[in-house]
Length: 280
Ligand SMILES: C[S@@+](CC[C@H](N)C(=O)[O-])C[C@H]1O[C@@H](n2cnc3c(N)ncnc32)[C@H](O)[C@@H]1O
Image (cartoon, rainbow, N blue to C red):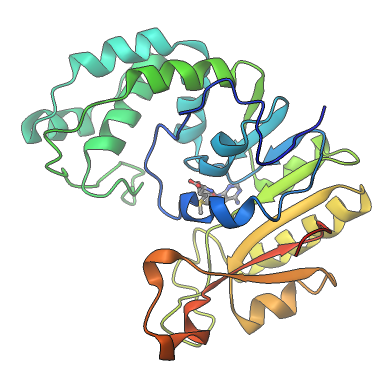
């Protein structure tokens, strides 16, 4: 099986993420097309989040996973029960009152839980996933009263997911499925703050410096299997030190962060690190 960017074997031209996700990589798509290998076999994305790159590539055979159990249950339900999800979403009203009520509810049905997840994600303040110390989702209402759920996209996504393996697991476990000539796209949460030169572990619970070292080990394993990897990360000396695999470091520019001419160097806040050879 091969993949030939930018001409995708994409049956659904308008396929897009069905969730809003912090750290989403839609802005990277254009730059990524120049980096992708000409051909590869299976695709792996072990920090799937909202899946913007996965939906863009739309691979035929893939393993997608994440540590967030509710997120992965939602992907599985979209794959298996899209009609039920749509029915439940239609039964939820997009008002502050209903939002606050649904936010506190626990549903027995997995499809209803997935509908709740998508509903809260799209009507909340900014689509971030945040839970309190008891694991309860606590993002405020977003006042997006005019938001229209894209049910057609949910059905298209469901069709695309039919052949995809969806797993709840730590990123390191993805190595079990990686084979020669596969592509692994890795988009971890960033540990570094951009407005500070230090390596600040503000999200230590989510992704620590220790996790970055585990990630570096995973990359060594991916390379041992003769597979490709593409890793995004913060453009920081510590990251360069940890990911010293003798591969390409490509500074990438996020359009929304572009400053004045004088700020040229400072605007490359993120890097793509990859062993894909080609037009770099
Ligand atoms: C930056 S987001 C990925 C965004 C995604 N590329 C997109 O475009 O929406 C990082 C993801 O890593 C997940 N994550 C954090 N720690 C993890 C771990 N140890 N193993 C697997 N996934 C993890 C988070 O739940 C989150 O969904």
